[in-house]
Image 1: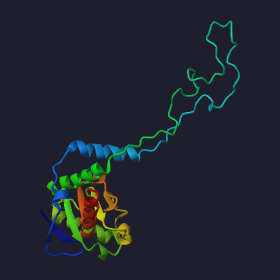
Image 2: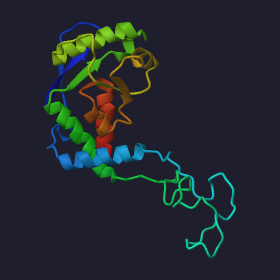
Image 3: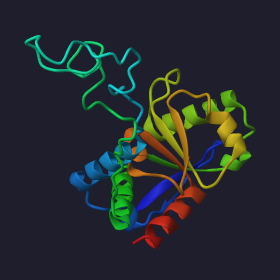
Image 4: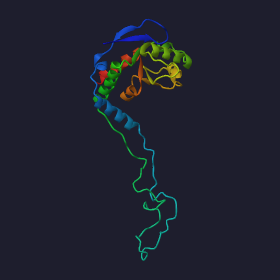
Length: 221
């Protein structure tokens, strides 16, 4: 199982490198991928909505009408949840917990499976020489457009597709180059997850990132 590796910052003849079959040659199980995406998205969710209870609504606490003799049900103040303007009966509290978990082996398998899917779709580009970037956005965009046209035969250089750049470690010049490019997401091999892989159309991976990713996935088997 091989893939071509391209120079990111210059024109050269691509070389071929071997890919680990246990990461890029897996049989796709859609149920596991869907489960991994569901867990990831649930864990991004934060409790923000908060409804006031009858004790938190501002207003008089005076008894709304006398206890007996009116023919109506007895009530205290007018801020019970059955009255307009009253507190919510069982509304959101702002403390809801939507956290879900997935066993480590399933997380690792789902990540490898998502990479296998992208490989079978020919949506992965392996590159070298991110370290040679100057940090200029215009220059890096030109390199990226040329790479996408060369590897994936993309048509429109004006509108970038959704691209995930996978780097090995923190690279300040790469961050500066890409942070203002719409449609381009930057992540590292250490925190890459199945949702990021599946949510982007193309993957552009640094060769060192491939090494780190292989070590990470094999170490968690």
